[in-house]
Length: 66
Image 1 (cartoon, rainbow, N blue to C red):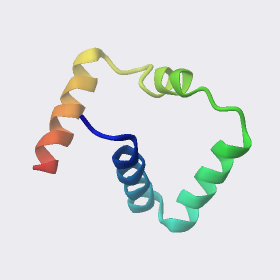
Image 2: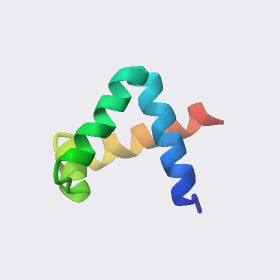
Image 3: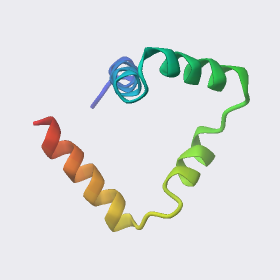
């Protein structure tokens, strides 16, 4: 099982890699400033994806991490 610290660390790395340090910092500031419903965000994030698509993306991510 992955610890909360590991999830935060990996998530931060992914955001910095994807957005760069400046925009990743801005993202963190934005979500801390506003009320944030993680569950709703997750539902909206994957709203247009089928379970198969989500599963395929997760499997591909895992393959790339090995």
